Length: 415
Image (cartoon, rainbow, N blue to C red):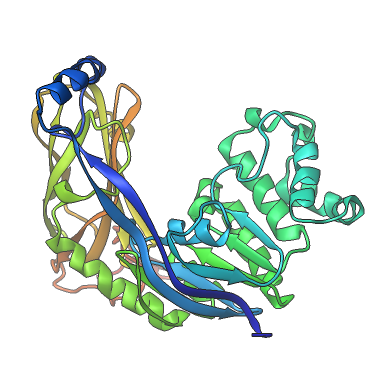
């Protein structure tokens, strides 16, 4: 076991989930229901049902020292649950996980930080939690501050940091303190593009120092470039493990099965539920007027509704963000049940399959947010009107372009 950094054996975690007749309701309905509960019990009426849900089950794998392993899978596959178990944030229901060495985790914004303490104090607190002497933390202090770019706010309580600032400091602490195992969740997506690139570069440097990294991300390009190995989770179980390249390919194949699943049945969603997406219908053809239609159900007070559709390649690379607020199409009122349609004149997407996230807010509050909600297909078409399609593998969006040459004979347009 000397070369094993992480050993997971038959690990499982289950939760009890409750079911109500109506999954979402207004506050007045909830209060009335609470008042009726004692009466219903006396009269023998059925109460809300509950059942056990296995978020993770029978997970077994090993990670060698110095390996960089990508944990991938669609939302609800159990990735974050696995990392919480490995980080000792929650206890497993069955099985065990042995980690050999000091562990630093970055699973959520501000993980391990005390909100009332300043950034400076939290750096030393984190070092102490990891079992490091104050002198060890002081030796890396300047590097941490320089990397996080928060020197101006170092003595400000962390509760006043933006989410981006908290992530920068959290990652800087986790990456620079002297630990043997680094666990990083998708939380890096909160940072801006420049900082994400900086973090990926730092993780690459850390891996060259012989430290073990477990990395969860939906960005398959990052997983493929950073990781040597991967583990693919599906419905709480290990579907397969192997080289990062093979795992990314299997993940892309797995994504295509989403097209057969109803979005209305998905449980791995966020939001208040005031509006809930129930279906997706897409008709997309390159170069043709296309549309994506989202059906929904909601309450009777749907005011100031904004809706977004995020399109990604099957490898997780961002392609487009279709957002009502950006185009001035906010819905000031919507009926309780219906559908909204996003029109794409002369769709400029390259033929292929795309994963879609759907998101909406009601009066500024997140009502529904489903990641990997569905896979949509863009069929082949003639975008440029030439009967020719650009070769695949060079991007996902077609851009109108015009060519001309300049020389001694004047200007000549391409034809």
